[in-house]
Image 1 (cartoon, rainbow, N blue to C red):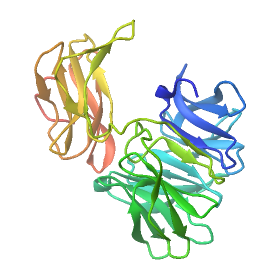
Image 2 (image 1 turned 90 degrees about the vertical axis):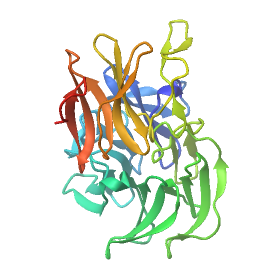
Image 3 (image 1 turned 180 degrees about the vertical axis):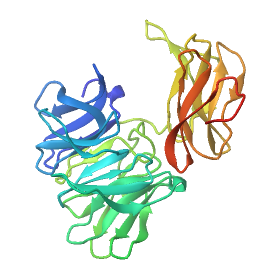
Image 4 (image 1 turned 135 degrees about the vertical axis):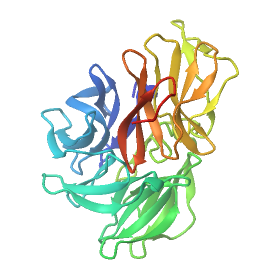
Length: 352
């Protein structure tokens, strides 16, 4: 697809004939449809959101709206129908007639009938798990595979009857394909494949790499890859830079990138979780990680000092400035679920 640098999440149809991905649109992040016989992708009319999950028959796609709801819409566009009033990520539309998704706090996995109905808890985690998601039912069994992320990410098998889970392998984003293999992604950014026994729920041999350097722009737990039932693999290439130090740059109209403060780099944590310039462009708020703590920091521009705004062992992310530049809002899970907090930009007082 064109403008692949803007693709953030994708899913390929079960028959391998097309994919749906999310990328910037005229009204915000939107879904785009790419059929292999077409010259270019086209927007899915009425679909604003991300985390697409295509229905098994390829007629519809479920996704998380920009307002945080789980909805479904025909792949040719239409009026979305709501499946859940709250959702976070990791949408999977499966053959069992359910749409699986992660909670807004990313700590629980739910499912809901694709036709609509009661939302059911599948597996519950904790804030320490970072997030759970990417459910893959095991054919001929009630058991489910899912990702528990991160450091390291693990693919686990869940027995719904007992509630017990067991680690299958290190990695994320499991896909079972018709050949009897489990396809998944390693933390090193490789797409791996291994034989899988549905009876035991375990691998039957060592995993072998299929592709190196799949993009982890969606985060360690959400590599930009998808595989269909017939083995069609779609992925976005890119080096694993999640654990590398990051650098802010100004991009000139000519396309040249100029460092904001030459020589200054920072640890962004697991993946970029948002940054914002102050209203007067004199300060930069961003999420940085030091000794495992993920907090909000403020950089004085162009080459001034760096100060830490939040001090908490929770995960803080996505800073935003108030219109007058006096406050910074951010998302934090310091009360277990992710909520909106704010604090004076000068660092005084407590976060509320």
